[in-house]
Length: 441
Image (cartoon, rainbow, N blue to C red; front, side):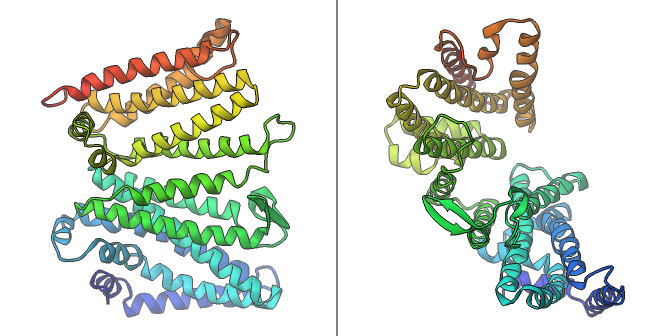
């Protein structure tokens, strides 16, 4: 047995805790039966599963590594012979094993209720749905805590709560998108078939299959973050595979174009793929550490034309940005072929502003003291996207907003020109700061 998992089982599954959990749940279900229809045992089991596995479980997952760091036992574990896979599985499911014990009891009641009400097929969907929700929520909290550990953050109770909130947000996304009820699917109200890449697929089955795939991806993310925490390197191919998957997955919904739009289906597919790639770029550039030494080394490798070595050591945000650039260029070519001049200019402006924003994040990490660079960059982005455009709008300066965010202008080249001038200026300053030797100011 996995030694880390076994250690957590010994700590978490004490006889007293098992008896108390079983007794409390049994009394809750018995009270629901005796309520005379006021509370259905299946509904009570679903609420208890959320409370035990999702809410309480995300807390335990977020504390699984952070607690070890706070108690100064994590360094001893990292020096042990346990590999990243063993450590990841042991932390993720070992620290939450007591939650899953209670969740298994709730799942038994949920399945019995689903079989009695809608049959075995719906019961299977319920199992996939609830297990995927629990795993995704707990894994999201663990990934967040591991990222914070790499940045030497996450030791206070408030920060642990933030990682728990990330897991709860992931659970909410699962609930909102993939409810196993065949009549209404989450907040989108999808019923019947979902058209994905021209295929009409049953909505419940498609969404549950998507849940299973995303569960696999987030577990891969946990493993890769654990490798980094154990001072092992990750290659670029898994993240590239994830980028391909996410963009292809999002582009498959090109048929869901907004009503009244003038883009064709191919253009909408490119737009959705570009939005996903850009979102992943923003997310990873904020989360990943930005080291002056690493950036200078990469620049040196490219300067020596060691292209293969440099490409295999790109960070995730760099690969995501390159992916965004490739898709954006394809989108602009498509818009040019369709004769959409203003839309082409807007697309060019968006890419320019994305380039500027990434440069701002990198620059702030080069000039800020300690670990405040990302927060400073976020404050600047709020300034340039919200406050300054509002001030310009209040002054009735027509084209002034195009200096800060993509806006249709006359002539149409003003917004992309402003975006790329700002992007080049920011990256020149950032490159200057990266090239500086010694400690940060």
